[in-house]
Amino acid sequence: MSPRIALANSADHAELHPHDLPLAAALQAAGLEPVAEVWTDPSVDWSSYDAVLLRAVWDYHRRYLEFTEWLGQLDKAGVKVLNDADLVRWNADKRYLLELRERGVAIVPSQVAAGACLREVVAGLDGQQIVIKPTVSATAHHTIRGTAGSADLNRAMDELPDDVYLVQPFQPEIQSEGEWSLIFLGGEFSHAVLKQPAAGDYRVQNDFGGTAELLDPPAIVLNGSTEALAAANTRRAPVYARVDGIVSNGRYLLMELELIEPYLFLPLAADSATRFATAIAGRLS
Image 1 (cartoon, one colour):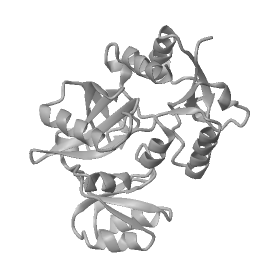
Image 2 (cartoon, helix red, strand yellow; image 1 turned 180 degrees about the horizontal axis):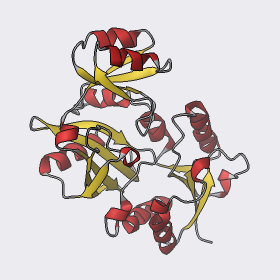
Image 3 (cartoon, helix red, strand yellow; image 1 turned 90 degrees about the vertical axis):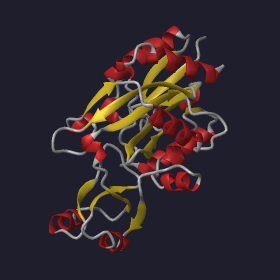
Image 4 (cartoon, helix red, strand yellow; image 1 turned 180 degrees about the vertical axis):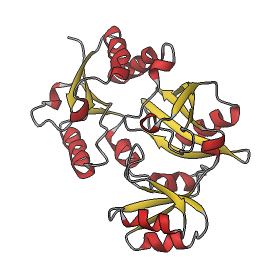
Protein backbone atom coordinates (compact mmCIF):
# COMPACT_ATOMS: atom_id res chain seq x y z
CA MET A 1 0.00 0.00 0.00
CA SER A 2 1.09 3.56 -0.67
CA PRO A 3 2.12 5.58 2.40
CA ARG A 4 -0.80 7.74 3.49
CA ILE A 5 -0.17 11.37 4.35
CA ALA A 6 -2.75 13.65 5.96
CA LEU A 7 -2.71 17.22 4.71
CA ALA A 8 -3.98 19.01 7.82
CA ASN A 9 -6.19 22.05 7.26
CA SER A 10 -8.50 24.25 9.30
CA ALA A 11 -12.27 23.79 9.20
CA ASP A 12 -12.56 26.85 6.94
CA HIS A 13 -10.44 25.01 4.38
CA ALA A 14 -11.65 21.44 4.84
CA GLU A 15 -10.80 20.56 1.27
CA LEU A 16 -7.40 21.15 -0.26
CA HIS A 17 -6.62 24.79 -0.91
CA PRO A 18 -6.35 25.38 -4.69
CA HIS A 19 -2.69 26.28 -4.18
CA ASP A 20 -2.06 22.78 -2.79
CA LEU A 21 -3.61 20.88 -5.70
CA PRO A 22 -0.27 20.72 -7.57
CA LEU A 23 1.33 19.39 -4.40
CA ALA A 24 -1.33 16.67 -4.03
CA ALA A 25 -0.73 15.59 -7.63
CA ALA A 26 3.03 15.56 -7.07
CA LEU A 27 2.64 13.49 -3.90
CA GLN A 28 0.59 10.93 -5.81
CA ALA A 29 3.24 10.86 -8.53
CA ALA A 30 5.83 10.22 -5.82
CA GLY A 31 3.89 7.17 -4.64
CA LEU A 32 2.09 8.71 -1.67
CA GLU A 33 -1.61 8.93 -0.91
CA PRO A 34 -2.51 12.48 0.22
CA VAL A 35 -5.78 12.98 2.11
CA ALA A 36 -7.18 16.33 3.27
CA GLU A 37 -8.17 16.33 6.95
CA VAL A 38 -9.33 18.99 9.42
CA TRP A 39 -6.95 19.17 12.34
CA THR A 40 -9.75 19.91 14.85
CA ASP A 41 -11.96 17.01 13.69
CA PRO A 42 -12.16 14.58 16.66
CA SER A 43 -13.25 11.73 14.40
CA VAL A 44 -9.96 11.57 12.50
CA ASP A 45 -7.75 8.60 13.31
CA TRP A 46 -4.38 10.28 12.89
CA SER A 47 -2.56 7.05 13.75
CA SER A 48 -3.83 5.59 10.47
CA TYR A 49 -1.50 7.95 8.59
CA ASP A 50 2.20 7.59 7.99
CA ALA A 51 2.65 11.34 8.44
CA VAL A 52 0.75 14.58 8.95
CA LEU A 53 1.75 17.52 6.78
CA LEU A 54 0.63 20.90 8.12
CA ARG A 55 -0.92 22.91 5.31
CA ALA A 56 -3.83 25.31 5.80
CA VAL A 57 -4.00 25.18 9.62
CA TRP A 58 -4.59 28.91 9.43
CA ASP A 59 -6.44 29.14 12.72
CA TYR A 60 -3.71 27.66 14.91
CA HIS A 61 -2.81 31.05 16.41
CA ARG A 62 -6.42 31.60 17.50
CA ARG A 63 -6.60 28.13 19.06
CA TYR A 64 -3.03 27.94 20.24
CA LEU A 65 -3.51 25.80 23.35
CA GLU A 66 -5.71 23.39 21.43
CA PHE A 67 -3.14 23.28 18.66
CA THR A 68 -0.25 22.45 20.95
CA GLU A 69 -2.36 19.80 22.70
CA TRP A 70 -3.12 18.26 19.30
CA LEU A 71 0.59 18.14 18.49
CA GLY A 72 1.12 16.40 21.81
CA GLN A 73 -1.50 13.81 20.90
CA LEU A 74 0.27 13.13 17.62
CA ASP A 75 3.54 12.73 19.51
CA LYS A 76 1.98 10.20 21.89
CA ALA A 77 0.51 8.27 18.97
CA GLY A 78 3.91 8.17 17.28
CA VAL A 79 2.65 10.05 14.23
CA LYS A 80 5.33 11.84 12.23
CA VAL A 81 4.60 15.57 11.79
CA LEU A 82 6.09 17.65 9.00
CA ASN A 83 7.74 19.82 10.06
CA ASP A 84 8.75 18.10 13.30
CA ALA A 85 6.34 18.85 16.15
CA ASP A 86 9.09 20.22 18.40
CA LEU A 87 10.20 22.59 15.66
CA VAL A 88 6.61 23.69 15.08
CA ARG A 89 6.09 24.42 18.77
CA TRP A 90 9.29 26.49 18.85
CA ASN A 91 8.36 28.41 15.72
CA ALA A 92 4.77 29.11 16.81
CA ASP A 93 5.88 31.85 19.22
CA LYS A 94 7.78 34.73 17.65
CA ARG A 95 10.05 34.95 20.65
CA TYR A 96 12.16 32.48 18.69
CA LEU A 97 13.52 35.60 16.94
CA LEU A 98 15.30 36.61 20.13
CA GLU A 99 16.90 33.17 20.31
CA LEU A 100 18.10 33.50 16.72
CA ARG A 101 19.53 36.90 17.57
CA GLU A 102 21.55 35.26 20.36
CA ARG A 103 22.83 32.80 17.75
CA GLY A 104 24.16 35.61 15.61
CA VAL A 105 21.27 36.19 13.20
CA ALA A 106 20.58 39.83 12.32
CA ILE A 107 16.88 40.39 12.96
CA VAL A 108 14.61 43.40 12.82
CA PRO A 109 15.09 45.03 16.27
CA SER A 110 12.50 43.46 18.57
CA GLN A 111 11.28 43.79 22.13
CA VAL A 112 8.81 41.54 23.91
CA ALA A 113 6.16 43.09 26.14
CA ALA A 114 3.18 41.67 27.99
CA GLY A 115 0.25 43.35 29.69
CA ALA A 116 1.01 46.74 31.24
CA CYS A 117 4.64 46.48 30.06
CA LEU A 118 3.47 47.04 26.49
CA ARG A 119 2.73 50.72 27.08
CA GLU A 120 5.99 51.11 28.96
CA VAL A 121 7.96 49.69 26.04
CA VAL A 122 6.06 51.83 23.53
CA ALA A 123 6.67 54.95 25.65
CA GLY A 124 10.38 54.33 25.34
CA LEU A 125 10.04 54.61 21.55
CA ASP A 126 8.16 57.92 21.62
CA GLY A 127 7.91 59.53 18.19
CA GLN A 128 9.06 56.47 16.26
CA GLN A 129 7.02 54.57 13.69
CA ILE A 130 6.50 51.11 15.20
CA VAL A 131 4.70 47.83 14.60
CA ILE A 132 3.06 45.81 17.38
CA LYS A 133 2.10 42.18 16.81
CA PRO A 134 1.26 39.25 19.10
CA THR A 135 4.08 36.77 19.56
CA VAL A 136 1.60 34.08 18.49
CA SER A 137 -0.11 35.31 15.35
CA ALA A 138 -0.40 34.92 11.59
CA THR A 139 -1.61 36.95 8.61
CA ALA A 140 -1.19 40.25 10.49
CA HIS A 141 -3.77 39.19 13.11
CA HIS A 142 -4.00 41.91 15.82
CA THR A 143 -1.06 43.69 14.19
CA ILE A 144 -1.04 47.49 14.38
CA ARG A 145 1.28 50.22 13.14
CA GLY A 146 1.62 53.85 14.17
CA THR A 147 3.68 56.53 15.84
CA ALA A 148 4.61 55.74 19.43
CA GLY A 149 2.96 58.29 21.73
CA SER A 150 0.29 59.31 19.21
CA ALA A 151 -3.39 59.36 20.08
CA ASP A 152 -4.18 57.10 17.12
CA LEU A 153 -1.79 54.40 18.23
CA ASN A 154 -2.95 54.66 21.84
CA ARG A 155 -6.54 54.10 20.70
CA ALA A 156 -5.45 51.12 18.60
CA MET A 157 -3.62 49.69 21.60
CA ASP A 158 -6.78 50.04 23.67
CA GLU A 159 -8.42 47.54 21.31
CA LEU A 160 -5.69 44.92 21.65
CA PRO A 161 -6.45 41.87 23.79
CA ASP A 162 -4.33 41.13 26.85
CA ASP A 163 -1.51 39.16 25.30
CA VAL A 164 2.26 39.00 24.76
CA TYR A 165 3.46 41.27 21.98
CA LEU A 166 6.48 41.90 19.82
CA VAL A 167 7.32 45.58 19.38
CA GLN A 168 9.47 46.54 16.40
CA PRO A 169 10.45 49.74 14.61
CA PHE A 170 8.66 49.97 11.29
CA GLN A 171 10.92 49.09 8.38
CA PRO A 172 10.24 51.54 5.52
CA GLU A 173 12.12 49.25 3.12
CA ILE A 174 9.03 47.02 3.08
CA GLN A 175 7.19 49.78 1.21
CA SER A 176 10.09 51.07 -0.88
CA GLU A 177 11.91 47.83 -1.75
CA GLY A 178 9.61 45.02 -0.67
CA GLU A 179 10.08 41.93 1.48
CA TRP A 180 11.85 38.80 0.26
CA SER A 181 10.51 35.30 0.86
CA LEU A 182 12.92 32.46 0.13
CA ILE A 183 11.56 28.91 -0.01
CA PHE A 184 13.66 25.96 1.10
CA LEU A 185 12.50 22.40 0.39
CA GLY A 186 14.32 19.48 1.97
CA GLY A 187 16.90 21.94 3.26
CA GLU A 188 17.78 23.19 -0.23
CA PHE A 189 16.96 26.59 -1.68
CA SER A 190 14.09 26.21 -4.15
CA HIS A 191 12.82 29.64 -5.23
CA ALA A 192 12.23 33.20 -4.07
CA VAL A 193 9.61 35.89 -4.41
CA LEU A 194 9.70 39.60 -3.75
CA LYS A 195 6.50 40.71 -1.99
CA GLN A 196 5.16 44.24 -2.27
CA PRO A 197 2.34 45.81 -0.23
CA ALA A 198 -0.53 47.67 -1.83
CA ALA A 199 -0.05 51.42 -2.21
CA GLY A 200 -0.25 53.10 1.20
CA ASP A 201 -0.20 49.80 3.10
CA TYR A 202 2.64 47.92 4.78
CA ARG A 203 1.19 44.41 4.89
CA VAL A 204 2.49 42.24 2.07
CA GLN A 205 -0.09 39.46 2.41
CA ASN A 206 -2.42 38.83 -0.51
CA ASP A 207 -5.35 39.30 1.91
CA PHE A 208 -4.47 43.00 2.04
CA GLY A 209 -3.73 43.52 -1.64
CA GLY A 210 -0.06 42.56 -1.54
CA THR A 211 1.63 41.07 -4.59
CA ALA A 212 4.48 38.61 -5.13
CA GLU A 213 6.87 38.24 -8.06
CA LEU A 214 9.14 35.27 -8.71
CA LEU A 215 12.71 36.61 -8.81
CA ASP A 216 16.27 35.46 -8.29
CA PRO A 217 17.39 36.81 -4.91
CA PRO A 218 20.57 38.86 -4.61
CA ALA A 219 23.49 37.14 -2.89
CA ILE A 220 23.02 39.10 0.34
CA VAL A 221 19.45 37.82 0.63
CA LEU A 222 20.26 34.22 -0.27
CA ASN A 223 23.21 34.08 2.12
CA GLY A 224 21.32 35.80 4.94
CA SER A 225 18.31 33.52 4.56
CA THR A 226 20.45 30.40 4.42
CA GLU A 227 22.31 31.41 7.57
CA ALA A 228 19.08 32.26 9.40
CA LEU A 229 17.60 28.85 8.59
CA ALA A 230 20.80 27.09 9.67
CA ALA A 231 20.63 28.95 13.01
CA ALA A 232 17.36 27.18 13.81
CA ASN A 233 19.80 24.49 14.94
CA THR A 234 17.64 21.47 14.08
CA ARG A 235 18.99 17.93 13.89
CA ARG A 236 17.49 17.61 10.43
CA ALA A 237 16.72 20.37 7.98
CA PRO A 238 13.02 21.27 7.91
CA VAL A 239 11.11 19.61 5.08
CA TYR A 240 9.82 23.07 4.17
CA ALA A 241 10.72 26.56 5.27
CA ARG A 242 10.02 30.10 4.19
CA VAL A 243 12.50 32.73 5.27
CA ASP A 244 11.18 36.31 5.18
CA GLY A 245 13.54 39.25 5.31
CA ILE A 246 14.54 42.66 4.02
CA VAL A 247 17.70 44.51 3.09
CA SER A 248 18.21 47.60 5.22
CA ASN A 249 21.24 49.86 4.82
CA GLY A 250 23.04 47.15 2.90
CA ARG A 251 22.39 44.52 5.57
CA TYR A 252 20.04 41.53 5.50
CA LEU A 253 17.55 41.49 8.39
CA LEU A 254 15.36 38.51 9.20
CA MET A 255 11.67 39.34 9.57
CA GLU A 256 10.33 35.86 10.27
CA LEU A 257 11.27 32.21 9.89
CA GLU A 258 8.10 30.44 8.74
CA LEU A 259 8.11 26.72 9.56
CA ILE A 260 4.37 26.18 10.11
CA GLU A 261 2.32 25.66 6.95
CA PRO A 262 3.43 28.90 5.26
CA TYR A 263 2.32 29.76 1.77
CA LEU A 264 5.21 28.51 -0.35
CA PHE A 265 4.35 30.13 -3.69
CA LEU A 266 4.45 26.73 -5.41
CA PRO A 267 2.24 27.82 -8.35
CA LEU A 268 4.80 30.48 -9.27
CA ALA A 269 7.83 28.19 -9.51
CA ALA A 270 8.00 25.40 -12.06
CA ASP A 271 8.68 21.94 -10.60
CA SER A 272 8.63 23.24 -7.01
CA ALA A 273 5.67 21.00 -6.12
CA THR A 274 7.65 18.01 -7.39
CA ARG A 275 10.68 19.06 -5.34
CA PHE A 276 8.45 19.41 -2.28
CA ALA A 277 6.87 16.01 -2.80
CA THR A 278 10.30 14.43 -3.26
CA ALA A 279 11.48 15.95 0.03
CA ILE A 280 8.38 14.65 1.82
CA ALA A 281 8.76 11.17 0.35
CA GLY A 282 12.37 11.16 1.45
CA ARG A 283 11.34 11.68 5.07
CA LEU A 284 8.96 8.71 4.90
CA SER A 285 11.39 6.26 3.34
